[in-house]
Amino acid sequence: MPRNFKQEYKTQQERGEHENRMERQRARRKLDAKGVTRHGKDVAHVKALSKGGSNADGVRLEAPSKNRSFKRKSDGSMK
Image (cartoon, rainbow, N blue to C red):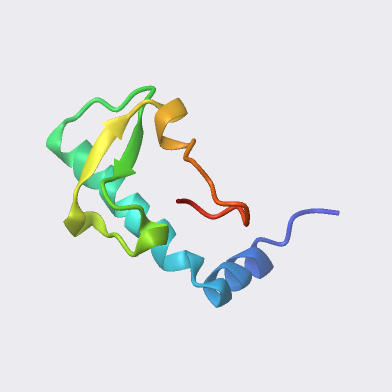
């Protein structure tokens, strides 16, 4: 069965994930426009989007191992 991309997009919007995805994409494009080489790096937000952050709070380049691994609470959310 092929993936239903329309359904995935709709679900993403209903959950409120779409705006965060667009915020991440804008941050990557802004760095690319400045000519920053981000090969092998992640664009990390200074204040995580899941914690109410935005591009206005600042972004930085980090190694994927640093950006994708955070201390967690027992319910799985970030500390």
